[in-house]
Image (cartoon, rainbow, N blue to C red; front, side, top):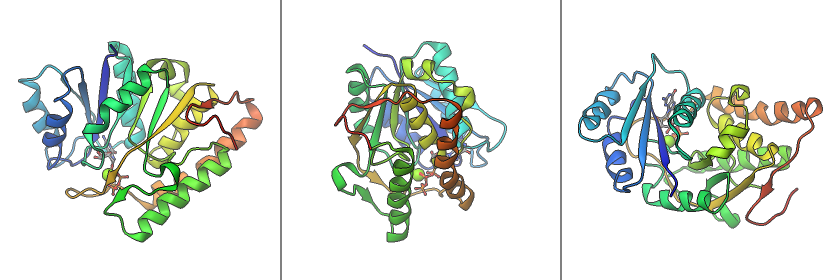
Amino acid sequence: MPKPLIILPTFNEKDTIAVILLKVLAFESFEVLVIDDNSPDGTAGIVEDWMKNDKRVHLLKRQGKLGLGTAYLAGFRWGLEKGYDCFIEMDSDLSHNPADLPKFVDEIVNGADLVIGSRYVNGKISVVGWDFRRLLLSKFGNIYASRILRMKFSDLTSGFRAYSRRALEKIDLNRIRSGGYAFQIEMAYTVWQAGLGLKEIPIIFTERARGSSKMSKQIVREAVWLPWRLRCSEFIKKPSSGHLLQTGKKF
Ligand SMILES: Nc1nc2c(ncn2[C@@H]2O[C@H](COP(=O)(O)OP(=O)(O)OP(=O)(O)O)[C@@H](O)[C@H]2O)c(=O)[nH]1
Ligand SMILES: [Mg+2]
């Protein structure tokens, strides 16, 4: 049986963190690492209270808001050192459904190195609560990135995903530079270029009902430039592309 670590980045998620912990810890084999960037709303305090009664909850406290990308990288390094072998990224705002978690673990057990929870499998849109503008931005952003990078995936920006230990050991985490959505794209591309196996599984994404979004224009700008930066890097380092476990197709 794998040893899964669910990594929950938090910045001002006091309204949802306890519910997420309850739902994730309902699965007996799961452990949780919360990475909190000194949330002014006291999110870390709620987690610390949980830790008094539950050894499966861990907390990394950082000094201030250092971004989603570096939060996940810190979580991966922490988990690798402690010997976990399945690493699941999940938002802490209830947009991702904890009931889906076992499906991610199953795919890792079956040999996938990156499992992406996709909102757009087979041309369907499985998003609840977004206005048209937000949907368009996400859908167009995904088509844009996958075309430029020649990766036939429907949801490269999804933040609900699982990595095998092998994937995180094989890629050089020190070379990952991006923050928000771009971080998800850069990680998927890096796993792909390492020749590893990727798979998409369908999820339903529900817009947060509480707390506030940390999305910004800067995060969108970064994601616009990233695919071109990654393509340019191919001129320096010859890629060995990975494979899509679902269909075996490539652009
Ligand atoms: N530790 C840490 N967590 C962050 C940071 N920025 C965002 N997060 C967390 O990352 C997750 C995703 O952030 P969201 O604000 O929900 O971003 P999003 O899901 O792209 O946007 P919405 O759909 O508007 O919610 C949430 O759990 C946030 O609390 C950060 O700088 N540091
Ligand atoms: Mg969110």
